[in-house]
Image (cartoon, rainbow, N blue to C red; front, side, top):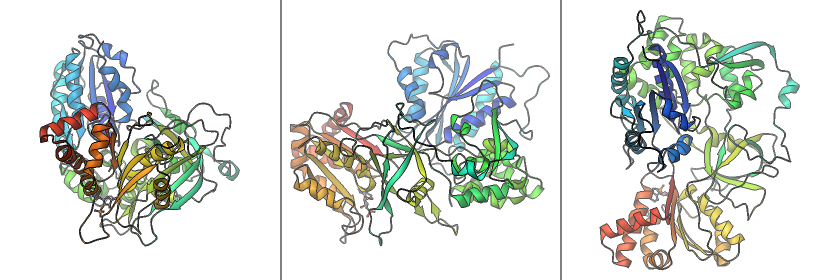
Length: 598
Ligand code: 2AM
């Protein structure tokens, strides 16, 4: 009888792939497999040669990029010097998650599948191509695929004699056991909660040890009568050892609001001051470092549990186990079942209903949730990424970000608010609260040669990394850049107007603006690009300049790229395919870079 070991490796950006990996792990236990689950970058890749059975769960992000927690793995697996048969002992399957409205749909899953075959591994079945655009979400493709996967796996690893598949009605133990202690934390312990900064800190902050940054200023940069509140927030990073360059990204670990923390504790009937301990049920698994620093349930709710996330199907599956009455159990089971996904979508995803709001809707069940299962039930709050908007050379000891405060309406009465942006906007300058931050290399890099022209297109908050780049170049003497900025109205959301003016006057910058709503018809940055085609051709073709796009409109990057191709055709006389090739070549040599978000 072969050893029944299954390894699940995931690359997840927003948590969907991690959630699916968790589901697969529970299914593996029900099929009597010893199962390990890790993010691809946590796993020691060299050990893959010994693995008999691996399922990779991989999302594709942005323009066909791997998620952050598989970037190192991605580099390793494509090394040229890996032996051809390195993985010949491995059976594997790839479960992909993507969005078919983006051009490189499930690119990472498809490319990984090919590469694993090249390295001699044997696919159990073709990759699953989960699609966020599907009405039922990725599960529409994933559910039947998982069925096929298990029948394939069982044909190689039949169930041990006398054992059956464990029914979904049976509750499995949680991955991390949370145990409440009899003691509560005193008021004094809580008031000293903010981590003191160690002024001699030489190790850079990271996700497991963020830097607790004081807020120096928090300034609204849009007019008060403008629909959107955008903030320029400055952190004091002195003594942090943080280093960054233009294009880098600040990661911020958000916090839940006191009313939400209170609400969770009263729903669960827990005293927020109760101390707790966490143990991994698998002795080989480590408890996440962030959990170790939390002292009481109130802090767990404030800093770790994602109370405002839209809950996923697995949440309902698990919650149904705690239902004390038939009515709530039935409903929860339906939301957790394959057939109930359309209804779950209408109940949760479409109106963006939060996990806390769902708990309120199921009061009897919520009261019966055992504290042990809290970490299994409620996902971890994920850090948020913001392009850094300032230069270290221009503003030493400061780090600035530009934050659009997210607020919108759904059919629910309460407006929907972005967790992190709402929290950041609420922080007073020089207040007591600290913001846990660290820095990540961004995908955009800027050339160091002083003479290289930069052409940057950044409508809205997309301008953040370009402000950092222009500031840095100006701090280094007279280095000129060209910026296309777009916003709704000159008197509404034209942030940094004065700053840009000074830079233009100083000879550091040429600025083109597109105010989309200051006249009858819409004017976007792409119009300005076309109007200035001769200048752009000179900068990009004659002077080998760099072209950048950043921003958060879905169709903006493509439309701006089309405008660039138009310039290449009209000024350079290139044919359409040649203009296409020209941009591809620019991309290869990093002279065309884009960073977009939604
Ligand atoms: P709009 O909201 O008036 O449509 C920053 O958000 C600016 O980007 C706004 O002026 C916005 O215009 C504009 N914008 C929206 N969609 C765009 C697109 N596809 N291309 C370029 N700019 C766009």
